[in-house]
Amino acid sequence: MSKGSKKTAKPKASTSQRTAKRHTTVPAATAAATIARSESAIAPSPTTPSTDAPVVTAVFTPVQVAPVEEAASAVVAEPGTTVAVVTPLETAPEPAVDGQIVIGLIRDLGDEDADVAREAALSLGETGSSAAVDALIGVLENADGFYHSVVRSAAASSLAKLGDKRAVASLLSAVNDTTAEASAEAVRALADLGDARAVDTLVGVVQNVTGFFRPVVRLAAVHALGGFDAPRAEAELAYLAADANEDSLIRDAAGD
Image 1 (tube, rainbow, N blue to C red):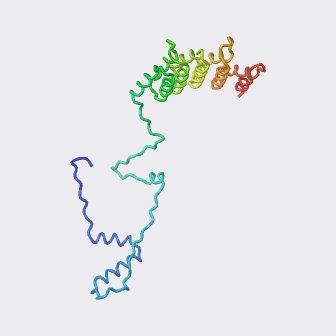
Image 2: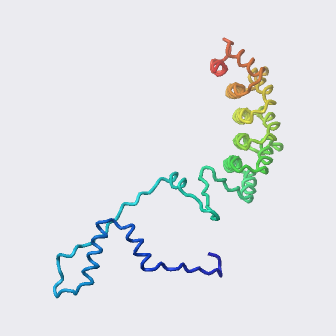
Image 3: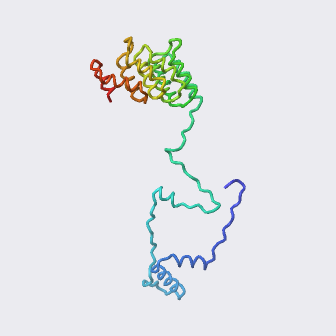
């Protein structure tokens, strides 16, 4: 009730109305016992209380609780009333990440402890922040050579989670990372983003003409190509699957 409002007193039901209501709801046996008591109350009270007077005992009916779904469906709003609708937890919107948290995580990317920076990069992938995308792209490009490979790997993974296509160009470049771990993570991120621009780069990784790419990166590229509905990707996988001279892991992955 809002401040200053007054309660409207409900008119009290008359004694006859309450009695009538009670008579219509009390079971017959109980009603008979009640009438008997009333008649004995009118008659002169004996010196010794009679033990023959009927005794009325309270009867409690078990309360049945309907399941939540049934209870919700049974509620019918009367005209002019407002019914509050409770949103299920699984569909309720998640609260936005505080901007100060994002700022703090971006700051931690520059920590000299690679483990601290790595955890910050992974956490930024959960924020959904546009500022996080820009910061992680900066880590991936590593223009000044500051970031450790584990931080670059975490940045690639988080960019895949954020799903922002602005990261595609940087991820394509990161495929050539000198560390196999970071290179493979960039390949996996491109697979998750599903941008068709990645197909040619991934085919180049699999073919490995220069011998630059480690087997773990090539295997990641084979799995990535399997997610693209593109003629070149399909042709490359078919070739690998039939190549008896290819590494068995690569050949089996291409045939799956």
